[in-house]
Length: 614
Image (cartoon, rainbow, N blue to C red; front, side, top):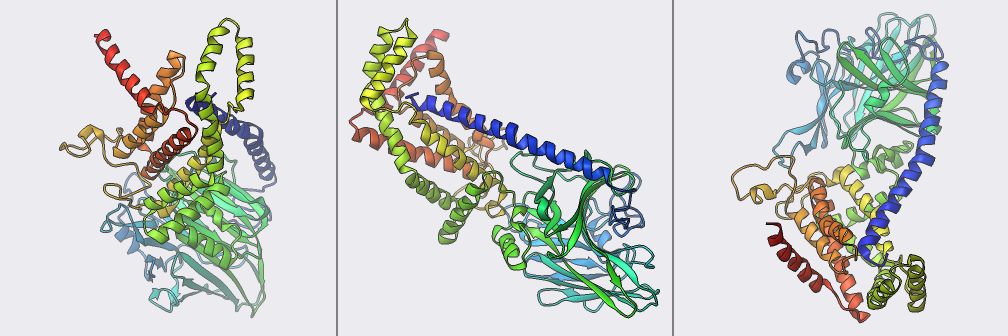
């Protein structure tokens, strides 16, 4: 235990025990409770296409308010059409803001054409902008829809309804009003507004000019056709997401949704939460999201559904408000919102605070260690705005963490230095009691007590580093601020692996390295620093264990080859700081630093054993 390499294995083992224990005793029971709740709620549901209160639900079925545009479902005969052709199928009003470009379809009143001006597909600013929402008929339709549902209310707006607009462009401080008369006494209006980021405000009004009262239920939804490509990482949620009142955060992957019971219509599966207040529902990718946000003070029913239409899966997150009775001569209204854009931390937090959206910050997947990941991001973001480089911010935050945990590390390294000082006595004890392990252990403990040595002290620096490592990995992986953030030289994206490869001598040879080989310059630097750190201590007496520790830096080098470059830079820098710290403490305690001897012995062994194998 005195050897810091053994301590690393112990620390990793303890961490696995904690994580597995959490999953077995906490996470698994919660999943089972959720499953039981699903089954109970499903048992209480009524016939398909109808919510428990008997009102038609905003589900994606033909003829309903969320139905696909007729003739635009991709099929084997025609396939999807081009984006330009799909946009031309409806008259449109233009969306133009500092952050967004696109349009609103007057046929159906859908927001189905959104591009993000400030984000591109690659690090090259001339590469295409990120396309978030696309109209029906394209390869991957993805849109937001608003409206009313109800029974015995006459014709209601559908996907075929052609609205009339009072403007040509929707922009910041430039709202547009859509209107439509159903010819049966109801006049519908929709006032659209958008801010300078990613939030749309949608106010729906209905005026009753008829002779009879009607009851209407407002709804909003986000619909996505086809299962998108996902990253497939355990640390990242992609799919359906929402905060539904007191039920809190709900996250359903696309595969998970397919396992839910039937809901809302033929070939439809899903889950609903009735009579909840506050929150949102939506669909999230790694960096982008679209979410329907109901009135935070009114009760609603939220739902996630998956419908199968031929070979196409249609995923939907929807909300339906309580009924509004509209008497003759009266007007009813509802205000809802749509978030459609990049999951920028400060922007998301600003919406939560300024608009009062319940727990909207959970749109970003901070994970179990949110109490570490959030402060970690704040620290990185602070130094980034101070210095203008996220890579430099990582170096400074790592240095600050070293200072923060300096007392713990000092005690650990002092204890390790004392262990080295008594190595001769420990060797003598092992020789003296080599046939009696019990007496050997007793003698060792007496030696520790006499010299005031804590044999497990060396575990603490590694144990402290593990949650910090995972937190930084999470921040680098999920936050869009790290996307395409450059460091220096060849590192132009800290969230992506080091692009160089030893296979083509880091670009000197005229061919591209295979994708499965991710061993660039920074992973090799990290491996060297790890190797040096391990050689700061004597090798374990067990030859097998010594060989394992010798090859461990090589294994970690290949493992981290495909990790984000920012994380590899952090690990290399942290190893360098640890080596420096350990060297200073050992010298202060009068203990010989065995680094050079260990390196010399390692390479001597290699030169001696090589001829014997030939």
